Image 1 (tube, rainbow, N blue to C red):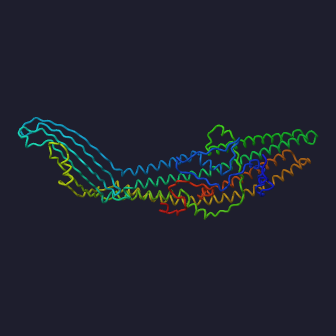
Image 2: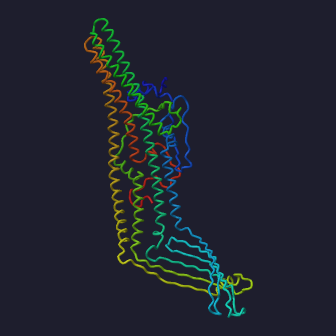
Length: 547
């Protein structure tokens, strides 16, 4: 595979040239533009899996790998499912205010021994009632009823037919409302579960955001780890070539009598060590590819057999970061802070409810009803009863107050005390979270500085090791050193090159970790989330700032 001119070590910056030997074989496929936009829906039904690139190998730029992982990984599918499930809880809480329709139908019959001429020997009755009841968010309960009753009584022998009416028909409309005035009064008390379930839904949305952020970071880390593992294998193969070359020269010197036959042992030991290094390096590549396949949700056996080939190379420009500015941004952007803030709001709601439950119970109760009786026995219909109700001939009403107060009320007082303690714990946890985030940001900033300086140190070490190998080979050719010493110097060069490659990968991962710690990794990687009910805009890290 021939590198393009832009990837030739002669045409790149000196720092890139330091590792070009281990990377150029992996750079033939152009990368997706760095500013490629990726939109990820939070709606579970909108998630669609994307196909892997075709070919004998899976050639991916970093942006492609991130986009594929965000579309395919099952971790985000689970997070989206949890978010969707939390939304159903809001509907469940709203169900407390759903009205209820009750229908009741009954029939009865009774008979008795007659002991008087004016006593009926039996009776029958039928009822058909309907009730409509429910709860209002003020705490009031209501019930509207419509009742219908028919009673048939056997005429007593002592009552003449013209003075006896049967059946009797009766209907009524009733309405009753009970409104708490102290305990259980108000929208904030009665709608608390709806508000808290919305907070839980928002928390699930931020958990989805956090999972997306973690996925982006994990993919980039795995990408650079794979690139390092492949470049490290190339470096180990070159080390094996050097060991074999030394073995060839040693054999020539032994053949001409310049070295003792025992000197060949050290070179063969070195070859064996290099071969073992190659086996380990190949295993590291397999591990790195498997991790990336896991993040990409590769499922087909044929795709698992295809090697993953990174097509991007790391950049080495120094990135200066301001730890204090990073802390400010992290406190305003990290989803953990937003979650802690709304958790405090949820605890405030619980405290308000429990404080309300400490109050005595005082309910206002009112009812109003209209009733009517059928008087036309011949047609046995309810028309007369309904007409009477329509004219409001027989109104009835009542109004009153019900008061109740537990003598000690220890349960409610204890629950209120627990809620106050939980609120203070929430505030304390937010303060601890802020402290921990500040530590994480400062540590992430130091890792960037340390990793960048490590590249320069590793590059210098590699350059010196190369010069040392050249010098030692000349000494060996002139009989001024031993094959053992040359092998040791070659080992030092192999280690130095591996350390340089590792330092470069660590630097890119440190930058990635910085943006994840600060909380702007999605904007940094041009990832947009669609359908979120919460805002990802920076907000003050104070109570009430998010909702």
